[in-house]
Image (cartoon, rainbow, N blue to C red; front, top):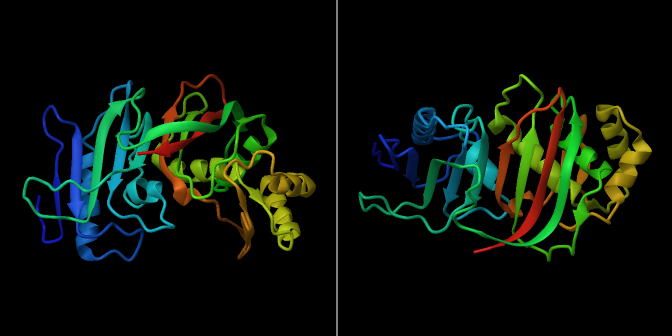
Length: 291
């Protein structure tokens, strides 16, 4: 399907891939009509991708990325929750230069959604040094809409292996396995943002003490935990392999706004693990990346 602003192809018999090229990237909101049409086409076509138990969705966004833009938003959150194609997990990455489609038109941005094996890796990045890793960490019931804070606190309470911190502006990957409760089929695309941001925040520290009492009080109320523990966890630099952030968390309206360096996470994966009980759990690692 070709439009004045985009071209989209797939999937076809024997080739479970959806590819699109566009003049501009698809916005989260206030999209022009042609972006609404492209987004609708991507969602409809990706619903035709039926993964086997051994497959996950591999999403790639290509083209120039704004400095503060998150790849998981561009490739996943702004498009769909991918409940069918991503039911076993989702892998995403910022791709290389946009490859022109067969129509020969030059486009600035590209989207690619394909089924890949669970054991595959990234196509456009090579993993380097491991920054941190953590074994199975209990997330409990994992209810409500404050999932970022729940993941952050669980990992802050855990005992991850941490190594030499990353240099400023180092691009990195987050690779996760998440174990849902028995008899649950999560929509992983709806959970990617909160879980990834929570993991990334757990490996930062917060330095601005002026907002700390209010932030700690608000988080303690949301999490039903002790404010003093929250404050110490925010300040603790021992696990901050991604560096210190002046205001990792700050008061916002009636809640808390988090500001990690998630724009440097240019690749990631969330792979579903087999459930064993009625609780959520997470394991994973952070690693430096290079082309």
